[in-house]
Length: 153
Image (cartoon, rainbow, N blue to C red; front, side, top):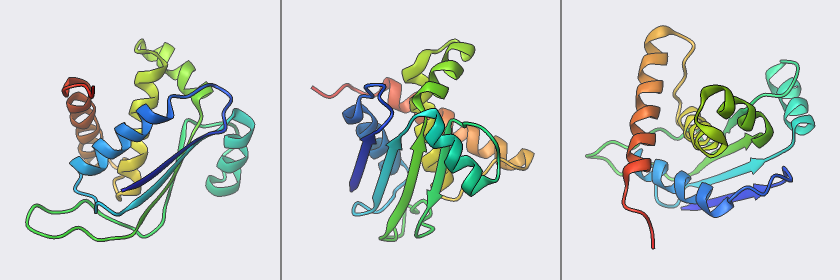
């Protein structure tokens, strides 16, 4: 798996931690072992510009997902598809505010946004109530497994 994490935010993001989380989520979702993912952490002006350019929404947001090869989660009895999963763009400053509001801190919020973004790249959405239930249930399950896994040495 090729996971590139670029911290352009000036916030001192732990890129190794984020790459491990991304690998964990992609493995759990049975994404092909040679799939590619790029995660960029940016400042508020950059994500606001991207949000307006691609989503036609004003102001900064927390995460944007740009799928490439429309990969889907692998099934237990099938070989997963090869390809480029896509790009995630995160804004740690927005994540910090949201983490404070939610009461779980910045790192937990960045982990949530990364997991959320990867699920979007895999075709999950939350526009409809049933989609929301499925996506957020899966997100909670993945984060729970991530947080209770044996720690790397």
